[in-house]
Image (cartoon, rainbow, N blue to C red; front, side):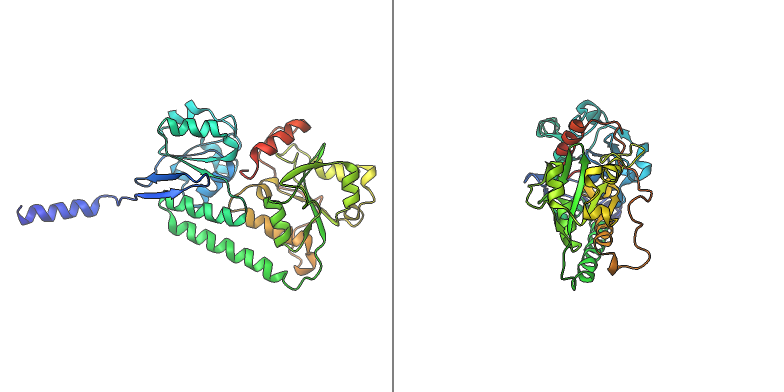
Length: 334
């Protein structure tokens, strides 16, 4: 082989894109081999979409769910259905080289996508540390490790700052996070909301409940939480009114609750407190200010009744049973 040809070969090799052969183990314990950085990505959960956009992968995302609403420009993307109603044909038609799935998509759909030869990674973080690991996992899978490291480093620093600020607090007030009100549906142990309450210096009034559950009006009155944090809008979307907040402020049988009497019922954007994505730390900071406002300055969020950001756009007139069923399906993948 002559020298000029060797030099030309070297130039071609240097100009060629570097391969990114990686194998990652997703939250389902499945080892997924990825030969090169994916260029056509589909997200099957709003939380996954937020992770992808935070990593700077907007131009590579070709499909999302009907409920992906953040960042706002995600509205320009093609949709492939909801959580448990993923349209497999639409997914295949978009020719993805990576599908980022979630628990609410159902095992049958995920198995079918894999059976069709699609590259699928499954995210289902159990806690905030799990969210951080998943951001790193997606970073490795997409060749954006540096971006993932920067995001995770910032999130950990902010989480540590909240804990440091609250380190001297000796009293943890009881806090209830309410997802819905007909029936009253609360966040229990092993949820993102429970963890945020704990990290923010509070005590979950319904920590004895596993994950999410319903409580009667009498049980809620007996628990008498000192602070009540309610989801915005209809609990899972913007119905034009903050229905859950209105319930607690207008229900005569709840007027003697400590939280109601003391003006400590707070509205929080349902998207940020429920979704397992980068904005979970925004939620933690807001919850911390609600629980211990004395630790923060005049820039603390306004109390309940102030305008709240909308949720992810489910119909405002959703029925109670439908609301509860959808929350169970979504679990931590909002």
